[in-house]
Length: 184
Image (cartoon, rainbow, N blue to C red; front, side, top):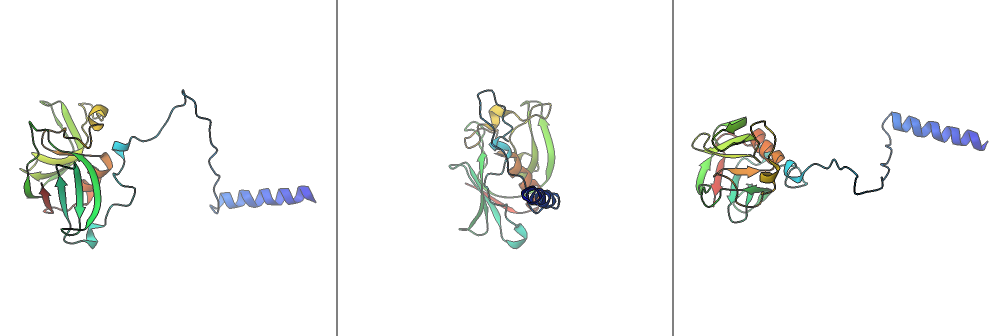
């Protein structure tokens, strides 16, 4: 009788697993100095753990960039922040322009041979491709430059606004043409 109960319980567990009613919990592995990690670097992930805002619900939304705080804010109004992104604006020798601008053109990738840097998911806000929101830099092979990615939160660019990869992709994919951009 005891064996049949175990068999029935096992079959029910397998059935639940097969139809998706339950999952198998992860088994903790011992951590060693030589254990490899597959954790995604933070500069590839969104800046916040919450979902990006639905801009269709916020018709007057705009982007605010704080050079002092090295942050990009998706604003619903002058005082309501929907989402905050960590960024890197221009170095003192190549500052990010201040003022009010509007979203212009966009693209998936660029590479500038003279600076030996490019980026992914760029969205222009001034001079039609000169000043951009974009991912952390990539090299001529399209690989992210980790040493530059680690500078997020500090002035580091040639005047553009560098973002985490996911944040740059979201702006590229969701921010509409002509959306207002305020940089101070």
